[in-house]
Image 1 (cartoon, rainbow, N blue to C red):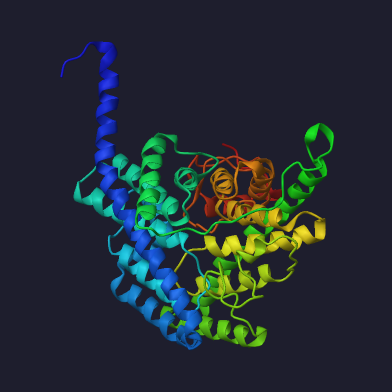
Image 2 (cartoon, one colour):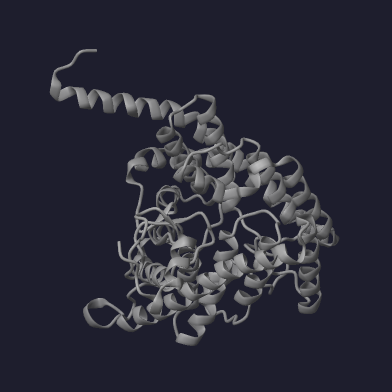
Length: 453
């Protein structure tokens, strides 16, 4: 079609929009449907573990079986979220389609036997695997395949938590510290919305959290409670340090497992023995599985942390320990829901110590520890608004942004790259340097001076 010059760009943009809508609509519906199946299966597995407590004794067998199956049949699927990030940064062999069924089945199995893991990693990998498979089938160019993978992340994340706006920003923000990939903004938003709507169409519900505390009630100068915000900022620093400790501990313990047990399928066997020993010593199963809800009154749970007036000073530490042992040894699942538990539990403890309403501090910790561990403060802030409402936007922002700054340059994603250091410094090889290599360069410099550009 021949159009006058001023309209040619608009026509090209219209064709591009039509192309992405036609491409992403069936993909996002497929991702949303797979996530709905995953969430339904996860609920059934959790209920089965509650109904049949003896299932946890199968944890060593399940761990051995899933790691062996990944080694024997999974190919590169074991790379997980990091493989997807690497493919976006530098397209290579692609994300294998088999990653989707592998991660779905193994994560459900992890929760069936009581492994402390989450959901986000599974949903992201389902989205990345289906997007990667479609990109290869259509022989799309590298740039289009990158965008498609970003959209797969957005659809999976938005669908699994019911937070499509956070899913959109997470997919754009997680790639590089200090830079958001704005070029994929509209496609990612479309994919996240369709993925979330698909889950809802399957009548799969998400957990709802309520905060009783009313913002600015009894506030001081100019209607702002400055003391409250100062306490939130202090808590944000502690949330960030907790996030950094979680990321570093997971990577470090994974290296220990590799040195102690070169044969990978044996690692979850030993880890399962440690977890079962902790269950026996603590006389509680509250730190197994997701931890979102429990069948025993009085046990700590994510929902329970939002009951006002509660005090719990240790649950965050035990969930931290259970999760690090589980994931570092090779059990499958995400880190994010356990991070929600850890953050909310730590928020309750800090709220009680600082004199801040514990339900409010639980909500801030919920998203702030996640922000620090993934270096995605904007996505986590938006998630806080989607989950808890805009009434608490200011405390949520302070908590997320402070935790992001305090967590330094750690991350649960080893494939994450750095575009702009958080506090000073330059990049010797320009934007896109791998996070771990930048940190190694910083450590090797005399008195920690920055390398010259």
